[in-house]
Amino acid sequence: MEDGRSLVAETCERVFRDCAEPQALALDPEDGTWREALWSAFEETGLATAWVPEEAGGSGASVREGFEVLHAAGRFAAATPLADTLVAGLLLARGGLRVPAGKLAAVPVRRGDAIELRADGTLAGTAHRVPFAREAAHLAVLARAAGEGGGETRRVALVERAKCDIAGGSSLAGDPLDRVDFGGVRPVAVGDRPAAPDEARMFGAASRAALIAGALQAILDLSVDYARERVAFERPIAKFQAVQQELARLAGEVAAANAAANSAAWALENHDPESDAVLVEVASAKVRAGEAAHAGALIAHQVHGAIGYSREHVLHRYTHRLWAWRDEYGDESEWALCLGEHFVRLGADGMWPALTAV
Image (tube, rainbow, N blue to C red; front, side, top):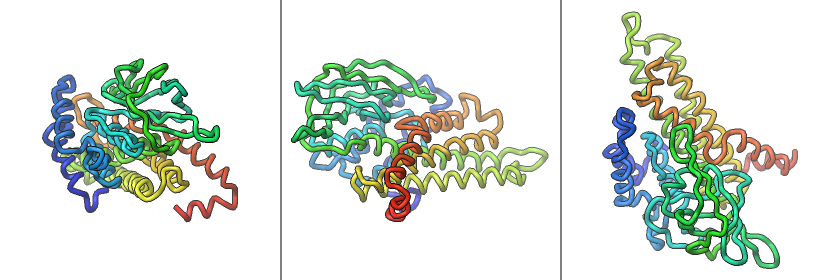
């Protein structure tokens, strides 16, 4: 996502540079004044509604442009629900609903969580580990509903967060990761168009792959700069073969994460969310980006040494968000299991045609 970046992505970078420079946030983590300034800038520039069509009150950016925004956001590792607001806005718009202003969250996040839209118009069920749920003004809920002929369908429901029972939790990075109980909550509105069963998780997982790819690029740049500046035995450590080897490994992980995130973005832009191509690309991207996050964080800390573990150092901020993003919307094990189950269903004769089709 580095090549041919759109004007939307460049706007996102300028906003982050002006409002949430990573080293400044690392030096003063308790000062939360930057959060509202950053979100106001997102709304003023239309970044918060990038995936919402113009006729629904949004900016009308393409799916790929939205992922470029997320890649840029990852390079700044700011604690903000931008990705979740983009995913929720997309779900609402595709469901035929008007997207409200403010921060949003998408539900469900975890495999196995099921929210039911009952016959009386109320919701039932619990969603776990929902990023930034307590900060959202509204939730976009992908709920199961009775379909025609006794079948089952999925509908998008717009829900006021204040009406839900929220149990606060935190990710490894200290960001909100909450449990949301919908028992008896009546939505503000319900979409009139059916949705793909796993649409929220697909876009959510792909968004985390894009964030990871962006953060890894920033970590690579930090590590290279530090290796050039840090002197040991009267020469920069970048001159040592062992350090060069580690930096080369880190660059390989960055390239792999970028390729995987790009493939997932391409699949979501060009295929139906229920298609085999989307499942394979998104699952593969989440697995590979998660592996790259693990390896990249270790390498970066090895290059920086003890200083990188201090709270005041910017690397600490990046690696903790990498570890958090690995777990959100399913970790590597969960998505690897999805891939395995998918190919088992296809059988021996179906696996190769499915891979070449992707």
